[in-house]
Length: 308
Image 1 (cartoon, one colour):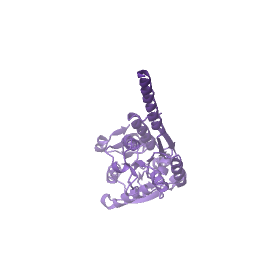
Image 2 (image 1 turned 120 degrees about the vertical axis):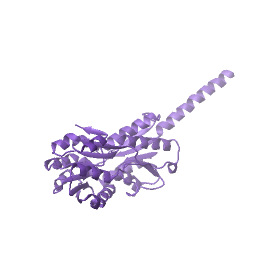
Image 3 (image 1 turned 90 degrees about the horizontal axis):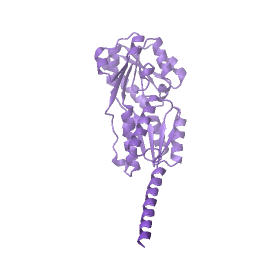
Image 4 (image 1 turned 180 degrees about the vertical axis):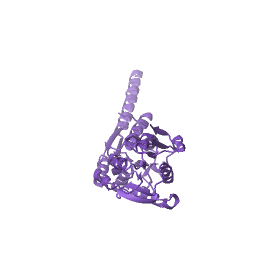
């Protein structure tokens, strides 16, 4: 009789473990990572590493990744697919992907990362949290002014991406303080880079379409020996002279912790949205030298990374 009781206890214990494992494996995280954008790829890598560190690696949670092109319909379709499979939480990188999910559903918890200005972009609600990637635009302008004393600044953005419009507006608000005039270039596809002209420096927003066309944008800048600045990292090795951006590693790690809490049963309303604590400043000195601009010593010493 005792043996039977012990055997039943052991079987019950094994079944309990199996049920827990099966339940864990059934959890699904949907992820939207727009196109071939290095910053989002680094964020996603850090996100996966963060999940693994919390015991949510392969076999413990299903990751369904969508990589839409930077177009409204593609973002909407990606969101619909993740909603259709009944994701337990949806993680989004960048404002357009986040807004697409919000538009399609309010029932599934959403965790965002790499969103420049969540509130200003309309990314709010009871079922959403995340970490913003906002950096001080004034600091970007100040450092770019130190590299070249421009009077006319080109702003690369996309008029269908709300966060990039916000950044363009921030740049414009600083014209009087720093003594320049801004000119906007609406870049949506590769050929649009040819629009860029009659400016002495370029400010590249977090526009997904601009990031996909960054080689074309940098190509135009090189021909005119125009220094470039960006508020999203990942393209500094491709010719961006000055990059001031929120650490993608921090973005991914924070998002993984938030998603893990939600999967663990925490109410999303108890998880506050975060601001970036780690800001990187990257100088491509090699590119600056190639286009005959001098980077001040103080700027170089303040940089977290210098490409020589």
